[in-house]
Image (cartoon, rainbow over all chains, first blue to last red; front, side):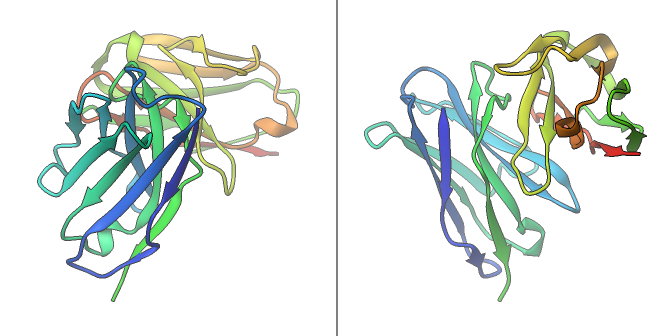
Length: 118
Length: 108
């Protein structure tokens, strides 16, 4: 499984962070789960959430009010949306293939740095 | 939320030595849902061990995992130069999944 994140590296406070993850070599409709994890010096590794091909989602309760993960099976990618960002959302964002466990992390993308700043 | 506490924070060892890394959970974890990841500088983490002791694809057999309940261990039998990195334990049984703060294995 190969995963590649894409999206803006800079987001203004109070705006929405949007990232996509393109999946290669493997079908996103395979029945596995696909997720997002972020890493910052302050919080370390933080699980954000995951989704499967049918749209079943799991979210970290601490982010649930602001986060949404969606999937596009026709284009073989999934996306992350995080609303009302603050500086605390500045982090390296990884997309992962979670395998059969929705909270797992089997394969990792290379990560993309998102900075929240005006 | 399950809090994972790793010890020690840093382990200073020489190549060829044995490394023992500890991960303690704040509550009992199903051993089928405890993993270890390795992260080298400038790289994404990489899954090494899942289900407490199962080696993931391409994980060398010098890496082994053990434990149950609230105490889990990652052992590297003989350190190779490429093993010096940061290691994270990861619980993925109940939401939210959580990670330990990491143990850095550095060259002595």
